[in-house]
Image 1 (tube, rainbow, N blue to C red):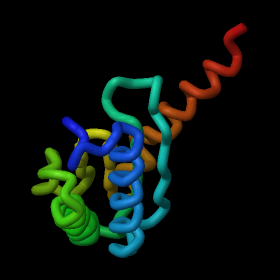
Image 2 (cartoon, one colour):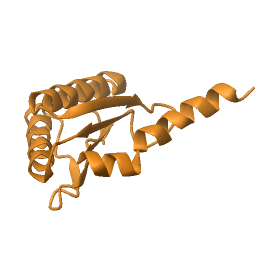
Image 3 (cartoon, rainbow, N blue to C red):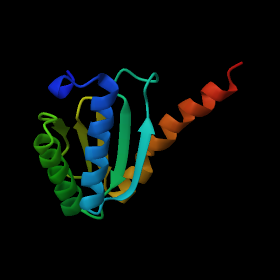
Length: 125
């Protein structure tokens, strides 16, 4: 996804990350974790993982985030899982957001997978 308004890549991804984090905080998402995946994946620059308390809260947090991204001029993000609202994936280009119900988040534990990449890099000599 091209950077909006001619901003440099890192400026655009930082702006997108700040928009995502502010929206999640405003929606009362819980246990928000931001993971820098620059240089680790071609998926994006940041991955953000958050929880909602229920199906309804996960859906509301996700819909609020989609509106915030659009209002910030960051385009229309791609969305998966909104109808079930157990695990919603929002691909905003430079930032990938996962919003889970707590038990689904615990089961998949994707933060641990991405943090394991950091640990493996530190042990390589």
